[in-house]
Image 1 (cartoon, helix red, strand yellow):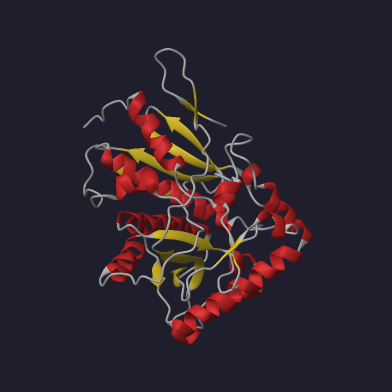
Image 2: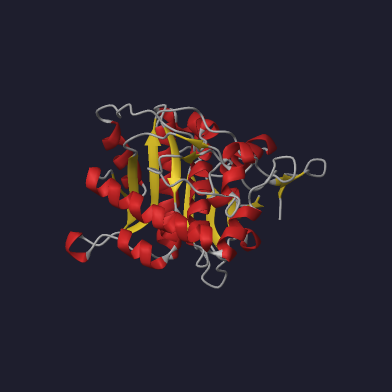
Length: 332
């Protein structure tokens, strides 16, 4: 059966949905190319927006692209298209991370509410309340990760303390490492300067009781840049893991991360990401479960809870204005 031509309005919506995904330091490290003959969308790595010191292997870049890919899949299904995904489709072209062919009616619809949630989802680096998660929601978040081939663990009190200790160590190292501090500070931008990076309004305060190690985007000028507030006594953390640690696993982990975030958003939960310990190989090794527990590779630490909505971060326009009668061309 011949698939109907993709109209410009639908294509713009798909691209906007993909670009609404979270990314490390809001680098938005993706580029899109539309093949009107398939029709299909290709997602490439924007290597020039990678973080050379913070993310030298590109793992976080792949997670970010995975988040965009999940949004694209959800938006495609919502528009009545079956998204057929191939990860890393060309070994001779490592910058091509995924290709999504947009077929006929979807085989199985996405859960109600995820499409709306992808437009509302945003990181909240503000303090949360100590309100408990409702019964059944943790299991739903675990199931969301499992759907994408990843695992999600909500640790007990001792496990939470261990995660916070390692995250705190990673944050302390980042603050005194000149290259990483400068790289992080370079992405702290006012929204009218660039559609990339973290605007000061979205940074959030530091925890003056130092229970929760929030990232200091203004490293070396912390006191003037970031106010202090009191955060929750017992943060609710979750750990996203994969069995293997290859590029395809990173892309799957990104899709799992975004699905967990969208399910959380649909239930009114706020979320922020604690990535600091994952940026240091020895600390990440400590996060990884030992072989006797079924060795799993940690891809992200999430903080979940109830609290104020975070500030929106800007997004690039992901297409060029088309010539009359032509489909939009993705931005380079």
